Image (cartoon, rainbow, N blue to C red; front, side):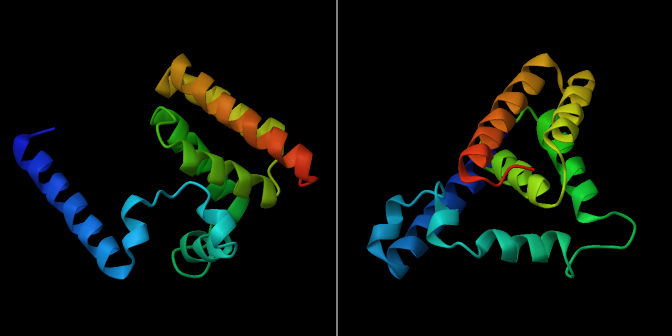
Length: 138
C-alpha cells in the first residue's frame, strides 16, 4: 500500500468515525458483526439490490450468481469472513446444496490455493452447522 493511499484510507476512516459520532456517540465503536440480527431485513434488501432488480442482468439466476460470488470470495483468500458467511447462507436460501457450495470452493483451490480453500470450507461448515441447528438446511 502506498503512503498516499494509506493517508487517504486513514482520512476516510476518521471521517467515518466523525459521522458516527455525529449520528450517535454509541456508534463510534460499532462493528458490523451481528448486524443481520439488528436489522433482519437487511440481507433481503441487499440481495434485492445486488442480485435482484437493480443489478441483475438476464442470463444467470440468483443461485448461480451466489455460487460465482462464493468462488470469487474463496480465491480472494476468504479474507472477508462476514461476506463469505452471508453469501453462503444466501446461496443455500437460493437453492444451492451444501455439495454444490463445497464443490465450488474445492474448484477454487486451483486458483486461490489450498489455504484459501481450507478457510472457505471452514466458514462454509460453520454456516452449514448453523443452518442445521435452525432448521434452514438446504
